[in-house]
Length: 258
Image: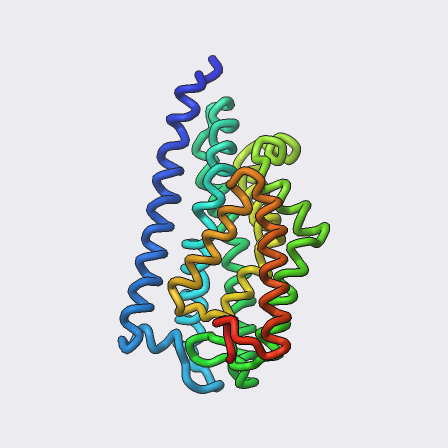
């Protein structure tokens, strides 16, 4: 017998709880780093020299991976719960765990790239150990890139798919465990395509700036989840372009290098 609507909703509770727990743990870890920067473990994530050791590489990568999970999992919850409900109709609600795991795999890949970019930028003396831009050209470039990308066809396509879970999942449905993993990868790719320039702004305000990290996470969530989020995304693009132009002419915005 096909599960009732109530049973399909209930089947998503464990996945929702797991996502909430992972996100809370991630934010708690970020808060600990922000308020305990003098701790030896925290210091590993803020190497003050371009010659990183293995411990620095691992620590910086883990920081990025935890930060991406904390920032992105909440906004992925509606898509995940919709996937679980559809899977529950086939009696396979547990596929939701594979869907989430694949989604996180994509952001782990992003974290590897971010770690490498941080090393390059720090070696060039364009960011400090707090991952705050010390270069006006870098600040301007990232702000203008993020702002312009908000109006790009790729951004609009990715955001549209993320904002309509049912349409995306039905159009991309794959059966079985492998199908769940493939769909999670696809959703992760769409989410990355939607948000990567906003995540790059972590190099402007600093990945150790908890308020800045939270602001970017809220911006991403609003774009994906709020009514008229696509219009809000366009408004954010205008704000970012204005901030980039202001930095270009030397007007202080409080973002990155002065």
